[in-house]
Amino acid sequence: MKRSTERILTTHAGSLPRPLALQNVIKAYLDGQSYEEVELTGQIQSAVAEVVRQQADAGVDIPSDGEQSKTGFLLYGNDRLSGFELVQIQPGERPRARRRDEEAFSDFYAEYFKTERDQGPRRQPLCTGPISYTGHALIQQDIENFQAALTGVATEEAFLPAIAPGTFGRGENQYYPDEEAFLYAIADAIKEEYKAIVDAGFLLQIDDPGLPDTWDMQVPALSVEEYRKLAVIRIDALNHALDGIPEDRVRYHICWGSWHGPHSTDIPLKEIVDLVLRVNAGGYSIEAANPRHEHEWKLWEDVKLPEGKVLIPGVISHSTNHIEHSELVAQRITNFASVVGVENLVAGTDCGFSQRALNPRLHPSIVWAKLQALSEGAKIASKQIFG
Image 1 (cartoon, helix red, strand yellow):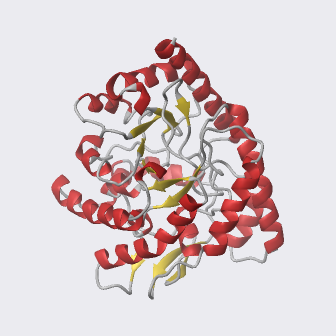
Image 2: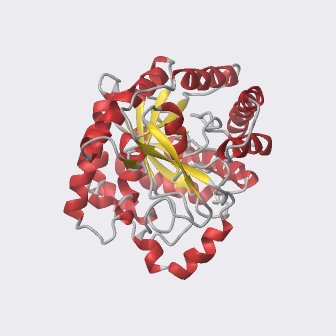
């Protein structure tokens, strides 16, 4: 894993907006309508090539494929694991219980959910049988598309994201005897995808927003200690899936969810940071740039980043249409450099910009402007630090 030894390197959290033509084919798939597989394949290849070019133009040092092939956080996992059935979710029907943040701001959320772009019938995975990995062709296609797109593009490194067992495992289980058995079954299966990514020469990013944001789903609230016990099971299952993969080829991403709500009931980073560092990874990508979590950079004055590890804090937020000033980005970067050491720092973003293919969190024009601000801020910080 590359380090910022001569200048501040930049990256982001993985997902990027899909072009409209690709969204249209994905929508047909999600709605259970007919679509041409050849068209979907061609649209994905084209989208990956374009998104890699745009990242290079924006100055991103460590790009991803933008997750262009993935329909969403849960459904992409369902596409690649056996043992699940898809349960139809009708408009107005909820796939899971309300969050505590929704209870606290019910009037706001009643209006907010009306703005979500993909409100039609959707499907959620339900585990009804033994889990195994079936996504070999899909991950191979992801790898080949990304390799082709990177040809002739100058990068420091490149990464592909994959979901953590604990986050995918928040779906309903009707087959395994308990949650632990369910999570370890997912881990045993998904490790094949993890290995394929690393064997192809890419960094593996583990996406695990579920570690922090499942806290908000506990109604009534658990104590912090009770919640940590549940989280430890998820961390242990993830480390089981990562067994045999070199730590310096893995980066672990957490955030408190990508939706643009109050986030008044987010669990503080200080309550889980030791669990984050327990993951067998060489880098830790952590949300740190929005008004709810920006103050937490000072936590690293007291928490020691393990030797040889890299911190990838968000210095660009997905939660606002404001484009961060490059001087502010530089200030955030130098704050983190002062507490973890510049060589242990890579500048990133809080969260992905389009985890759900049909519901980008920001307009694409703003996304690219934000990534440009990230690279400009990193240049300013590099000049200040390295001279």
